[in-house]
Image 1 (cartoon, rainbow, N blue to C red):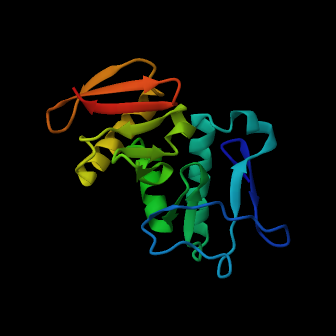
Image 2 (cartoon, helix red, strand yellow):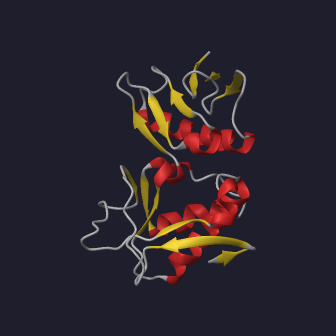
Length: 196
């Protein structure tokens, strides 16, 4: 498939071989995980000539636009998975958040990344490392209010994606007016966030 002069491979359609379903752990606007007994998986990926640039923002954005086209073309398409985050999104959710992002809106942090609770109660991103080579960790006690911590994480993911990552400590003001410290760690491929 070609879009904007870039070639992408779509596999899993008959008569070709089946595409395996990646491990999906996070759901967005989807009541249950798709079952390959009832559904077939298709895989969309950059073609061989652009494989070296597969993680570049122009290639990813073009691939996401093509995926939105597929959602609009196939009425029976149930969901869209994003393997780096282990996430699966309902078709309408995916098309809505991705189209908004492609039209200069916020990055779809819920879907192209996900968030899980760490054993110590911190809120930890999954899949952000695909974009900026580091995950985000909202430290306790800032993570105690899970809803507020997730909202903060969504904002920070958008901020970090726009900046292209973080290489040195940064201080920002949270929506509630408190001061936050963002500290990247090279050893752990992590950005930790806590109140100053």
